[in-house]
Length: 440
Ligand code: EPU
Image (cartoon, rainbow, N blue to C red; front, top):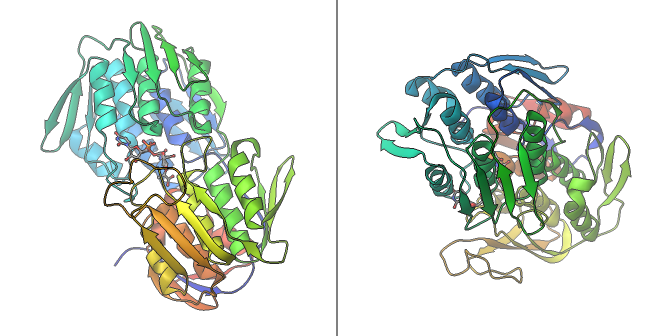
């Protein structure tokens, strides 16, 4: 049995206030960046989520002293005694996280070697690491695949290079940045991802002494430097968590004020939220999301890299779309297999059909392949409680929203996966007046 079982009595609006802290998709990367400094770094607004735990453990294994004040959200990282760690320890510690791959560049600079265990992450597609390995090879690393994982070496250091990404991958862009900043000479990265979390990482690296410029055509130039120092930085707020609570408010006819939410990183989400019929008020200290009454409206939306509609916003929104009048189309163009979670929604009464074709309007790279990456949602359909199993982080939160919106009792199993990216979600649900009990 998967850990973490919740009983949810649904059919009540979520009402109240919660706080979001730093972004799950920035904080672990900023923590890895601390490895590059010769002096300690301080990161603020750090949420208590499992990915932070995993990276803290991995940093400790590599000799970094980690001091986390959970209440204040302040993390102090001292990398003055970085050392190699044993493969078996890294493997045991990494769990299902994909972050170890981002340790490679910094460790190659510091120690001349790095090891990547078998990588996990959410099961939302193949999630290959070919871009990462190609990038590290381009910088001059030797990649040696062994039974326990992959060992990389660069005894003579890494040199700047030209990289042309086949797709604007977030991780591959971060890999390039974390490696290029200390590589000898110039690096040019074409086709880079420019997500706000990446720009925040650029800010972190610039504070450390890096020289990085981002052009309007997704090209990033990095001028390698000989030394980087520690940073003092406040992580940008988590725009995925914010959007998740927004969709939860909409799906349950609720009213949720999200302290700490930022408008500027969420423009695309807010437009779609409004088109569906949701309302929001932007204030200095956060954003209020609510169902203003009346019918929700169906939409056509495609996920895409920034500044498009994020793939991670898709799943919670689909739950709200089951309550919209008419046919909605969601075309997933970032991951080939991110509609697995809709099975549980169907079990709860939703009418959702998934297709191999590109239905959103733009042909994407998954179009002529065997991937069910477009969904048609027909609504409104009342949802009823059911026993469901969480498939992955975002799909899991969507199941939780569906259970909260549904009439009757649901049992949601495997909610420990949700801890990876949603800080204190149980106490936040309590603050929003949800009727949720942890059974295991
Ligand atoms: N890809 C490859 N080869 C690679 C790397 C990626 O083909 O070597 C493909 C992927 O399979 C995918 C696409 O490129 O189809 C985009 O993947 P990307 O590298 O951009 O994703 P990531 O860096 O692995 C991060 C977030 C994800 C988020 C994506 C897209 C972290 C830790 N993860 O993943 O977040 O969905 O960017 O924005 O930052 C989540 O938070 O639930 C989550 C999955």
